[in-house]
Image (cartoon, rainbow over all chains, first blue to last red; front, side, top):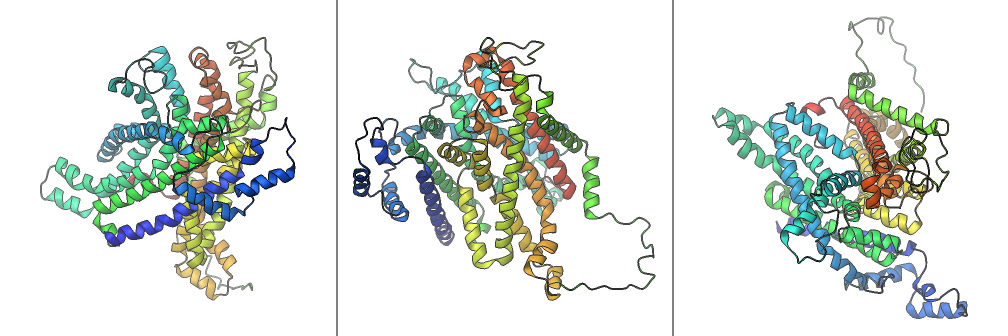
Length: 319
Length: 308
């Protein structure tokens, strides 16, 4: 296990570096530089020489690689620059939105697993039955309808017409925090975010279980006289769910991408809605901070997924 | 390469060994495709929507850009079938013209993805060694970024437009095709007929074009079809957030953006339901074609259930 861990970590390091290089390149594509932004075009009176002098003092005329290394050093200390909109540190603005997104992501993951895996199991065990076909059609639709349309439809129906759920936000304004209230606010965005994930989990669980059901040990277990429930429940399912762990990890990037839309529609205060606010305010440092934090979390999650998989399935470690 | 002509003895080629000549893999796949009703429905829908988009000028009852502040958000009438938007433009005409944005982005993005994926995947798969290492690590880096988040930040930085959406999605979406091409080449490369071609003196380029790529074509076409659906969904999401096609040019995504106001959402469903349904129909149609193609080139798939 130690060797596997080490190899996996060594693979992640260059990826992280690549991500930061791309990320820094993106920051540099943004129009304007900090010095010209300090100068008001109406006042004027600043000579180009003065500007250049100021840039030199700030190290902005150094070659790109030098600036990148300096930026990387600062970023590793947690300094991602300052928000253009309100001057606060980017790291602060991102971290105060982190918990919102985490709650939404965890809720969406839970919802998709609770709905997706059982449906996938039923679809596999009773292949080509009515439930199998209905679930196939439903997951096909979920993959074809844009999530924001589903989200808008649900707000229209359940919030505006039937008044079952709030239209958005995290808590009812002016009321003290209560878990029930939070969950009621969380329900719709978590469901909308998990839709695509549910479809994927159904398909994957079904395929994986069908595959497991064809193995020799299943025939052995059946011919031993074990009940169908024991055969499927303990022998097949345990092996079939192993690869599902990977697919859960693999779809985290998609899920994170989905938060941009979901959080915006439901006015959920998280990193996703923060990046859209940053886009609207042309707050490039905040935008890039969110992008970078997301990319690095995705790498971290895929690392964790691989480790979890290696822990459950010893074959991986010895390959 | 030198052309070799071989004259066969007269009985070969005339002898009818099998009563029915075996269909070529292509013909067999085409037959399986046509036999699937859902796939054919998908093709018909895509063709119909494409025709509507191309002929939007002729079909649309009004100019999609003409504003009329006397009737903002007015309800549907016989003249304005789906009502008018916030500045009085005819929603039905905008719906027809909006198909252009979706289809353009869908096909242009995938064309870029496939071109890049083919190039990168075949270099990595065929030349192997250091090429493979470097290109596949680069693929990992591109894939490590959550596509939608990156697309949002890049388009925001470059200024939103249809062209920039295509460029960003096109330049970042190739890893799927590249992996597919590389994987297939790695397995095809070991086949005897590739060795045979090389021993006959075929160049690398010729082997790739004539012997390797035809084998990879089927999975690429399938992936490309699903890629079109994905690109259309991404464009509508970007336009919905104001980061895609810019008004007044209509796109289904930016038409839905009007529903971000709760009053419009609640009392004027005629403004946002039609573009939403249009996206769903187009994307579902493309996905039906993709499913049909997938089953046609890999007939066992449906029975087994696919892990892909």
